[in-house]
Length: 385
Image (cartoon, rainbow, N blue to C red):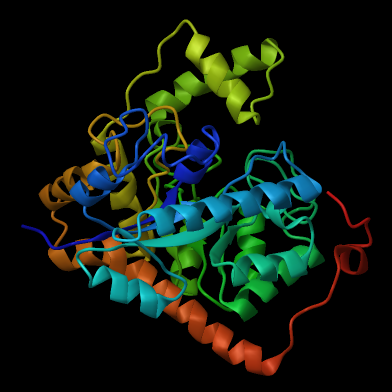
């Protein structure tokens, strides 16, 4: 029996729980919860040793409202860990992650903030999120921030602004991982040029395999290898299956004709649910194709897993929930992946990236104090999104 334990880069269970007021008595994840992709029994069945919980808020929340909602998400993760203390353990360091992976009884719980709008253009807020345990920030979500371009919005900045580069520098100084999922290729290039620590893509796949803007182009994968970072392949059907992607483009065009903003996740989900042409299925083989490509272009040291469970309305056949990672690993074995390859994919690479980012931060904290720069000073614009 395999002893591999998966570290997954992105799971939206906290946002799913927001819909029930974060009431873990009403939705007790110690018991099977078939309406979700995630519960404790299935995490254990899937061999999940640690999970980055996304403390996500949508772009419809801006300014102080975005900050408040992010804090509520963080609070929900702490409440979840406390409620299920025999199963979950808070992890805020590479050493803690490795120790948790060596404990067969605990599932490590890390946090990643999804979307730079969560910091409301404030480095002080960024540092506060770090102090609360957040260990990565996705620089954008589906819309641009005032300092970075998103992959799914019209470009405004040409990548990162001066303040955006300061955000990356401050994340490097703290040891917070720079997450480039959701950002435009120009932002990817700028962030890779600005960072002195390895970066991550917490839930993105290969654009050469499926031409979706949320995926990573090959030239960026080459830069990622030189940077020492990691691309954590996602399972989102629209991102992994060219057939589903083609269907989604047709549905998106129909949505736009109907006046639905494609960046509005809830509105698009509702539109897709009523769309007369059913969504074609994605499969385990689609995800395997991305992992094979990522390994070929970036190298085995730069590949991981970021399923995006409970953040999507559909999943590939065979990867229906968090219990199914062994199905994917068995499919990779059939493709010739060795056990050392799989160990790197499931946990070794992200542990190394986390450790290396911490080592950079230890040096930088000795070299410079926290930045007190503002977006107004660096970009010459009002301190608001």
